[in-house]
Image 1 (cartoon, rainbow over the protein chains, first blue to last red):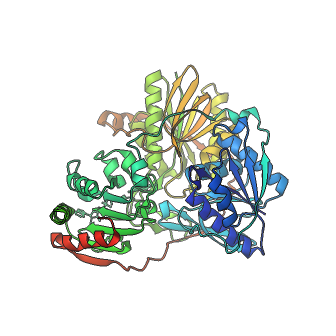
Image 2 (cartoon, rainbow over the protein chains, first blue to last red; image 1 turned 120 degrees about the vertical axis):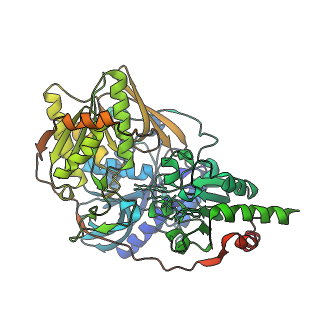
Image 3 (tube, each protein chain N blue to C red; image 1 turned 135 degrees about the vertical axis):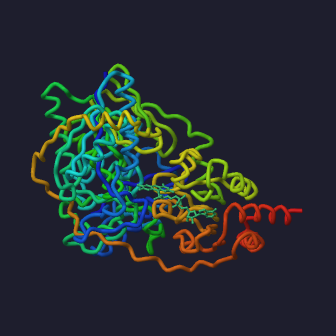
Length: 325
Length: 255
Ligand SMILES: Cc1cc2nc3c(=O)[nH]c(=O)nc-3n(C[C@H](O)[C@H](O)[C@H](O)COP(=O)(O)OP(=O)(O)OC[C@H]3O[C@@H](n4cnc5c(N)ncnc54)[C@H](O)[C@@H]3O)c2cc1C
């Protein structure tokens, strides 16, 4: 049996958690129809119930109780460990999100078994061999998971969150496994409001205009900001830009920044390093503006303009203004 | 007085093209050069700030080959006061092995009366991306751990660790001793001063050998992903492309 740890937001199960369910269905099919169990903690929005059925989850363990009111990696892993022992699951997986990696790593340490982070695919069941992203996605590693349970996280956006061919009627188990005091020492003790100007606008905007080293300096963002404003979009940047202190870190897109999935992403003067790509690859349409026609961002984009962003972007702004009158 | 141990790993500089070693077991940094991951640069900065603010000591530790002393010297140059080198072929050590080795050092320092109030690591290393050494270390030591910390303070033996959580900022209040893994972005790592560099050369390193045989990383091999085929449509060159760009906006219903 497969046990998945799934995350929810206000709208239901998160996209990358549903991608993990898609991965698990493929693993289940390869094993001749292995039962898929999902563990969810705390508040579960109504929409999640329908999603779990549509995505083919067989059994749901809904974990609540005072020990789980505030997040603690150790407490979460302790509950997962308890469920997995009772259900004898041989695989425990989660999405390769910060929390997914954290919870599975806790479980790996508790059980003293290996863990594979950011898995893309599996190639054999016995021995269980997986391929995962390493070096920020620029290389792949084939890795064996010889021990049971096999523990791993699924790399974000490597699978598509498509519903199952056949709906299930998941069996719900409401539970509240006991947790040792020691596992509650490191738990969230205070929470602040999400900052208005933090990554919220970036991850929810329909249009994101990106700027990288090509901006040239802290004063090189006037054009892209004007374009973003005219398109009702947000500004996002590469890590070179935040490392050089040209723009704040919360505007960073990528592996160590925000993951965006707008209708349109317009990266200007961004080379498209794999770590940046990791954060923007699920954009519906990408229009790259770059002086280098060979830059990975250009070759991976849907559309591109080859040229200096300091000339091209103002020309686009001017054209937008011309058509607006 | 807060004594911090900060653990770093010598990794290939990953800003350029990735090359694999001939045995396909590691990323080859011979041409790109070596560094530590950006999360670890921030962990060093946090360790040094804590030591400075409290009159304590920041000790840097690495497990790696002889050349990894370069990374220790860099950390000493920005304010760490002591350094531990576990001399070993890092590639043969899996995440659980590394955690066990660090735990052995922490315990031996404890036994010698120079224990650490806080152990900092990076959230994940930029080469192997395992996301687990800090957590395994915490379990090996029987200590609490907070993951993905961007900033932290220590007062009266309690660490306040700040994390950018999925729904906004979060704070953990955890008594020392504890382990924390650091995510870049909370602090700006400082550059070494000339004085710092000269001072770093004079510090005597504590050199140790591995305490146990490594079990390994279960790695079969590394591979480079195949290049993706391109289907890009070039709308034009230079400012003359602007009308085609705005046509595209209209087609996509953006304007
Ligand atoms: C562990 C790790 C995590 C990372 N996480 C991230 C992350 O989250 N996000 C991220 O972005 N990066 C991340 N990186 C860094 C990443 O590897 C790249 O170094 C970075 O994305 C490059 O930024 P850039 O594209 O702005 O700069 P460069 O790679 O220097 O590219 C600049 C581009 O601009 C073009 N250009 C120059 N001048 C102009 C001009 N006038 N007009 C138009 N085009 C021009 C050039 O042709 C080039 O393509 C990470 C790296 C590591 C190792």
